[in-house]
Image (cartoon, rainbow, N blue to C red; front, side):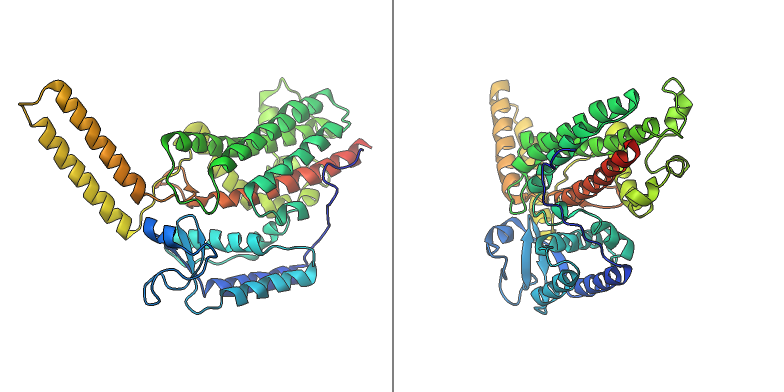
Length: 398
């Protein structure tokens, strides 16, 4: 096999005791911080260095970090002390892991989950283990675009594999590799619109582009894992499968126990049991794309925003009724006045609205509110699964 596209891989492994300690430190961290929704003005006035904003006696006192419209608050001033403690503990296991930013995003994701559900949230040891399954290249990534760059490594390596079965090669080349290219374009498109410092609301065009790409992002990840399972099915001599047998084809699935136990050593090699909860989330994000309400980016308001939006809607409705009730105006005059009212409303709302970076598929049904920063984790776990899968295929193909 040729030289890796990225030849900087560093192997690291955390014992269960170390994972448990890091988990405890993170949960202790959560006790001292909370998340608040910033208004447009507050988000604009946030210090570029993410220090305190607003008066010391305001409810926004103690904001230590701002991500889009979200403020992470620490009123006791222990944020950086606790962050250094967590990162320092991790560094005793692997000094090469410079992961201040990933740990902050991990905490932010849990705070957002806590805000959405309205209940106290804690990290489990299982989800911390999954976080640390990411290869070194991915776990130190500080942005979505940086994580996406490493997809090229997987594409190159997929082309280097020498498979025995014609069917497995088709699923690898036309399924896994082609979708990796598509996934890379999803990442590029999202990164052109999204960044953690953005607070400007999305234009209609940006909203369409972002919605399109977040839906296909998860459709592609789900499909890559499906295609990967077929690669194993057709490449493994002991697994009987016929492409003409639809029932047999439906039994193939990387995380289906009845499937992976028939591929010797696959579950252990890929840590499928540990990663299963992550896969369930991917399923929950992908299925609405194909069957129901697709993923979208809702407007999220705090109390200040909500009152302003409500007042603006009432004002707009009142003006619409008054305009339509003016029987002395011509049709053209009424049309022009309605157009002007719409423009004024859109202008006012565009200044009130703040980009949150969050998406879901249904306010009524979604169990979690997701933020775009989580895509770096998803790419990391996908990288891990493909990395280990390619290693395994090299072993069984000789």
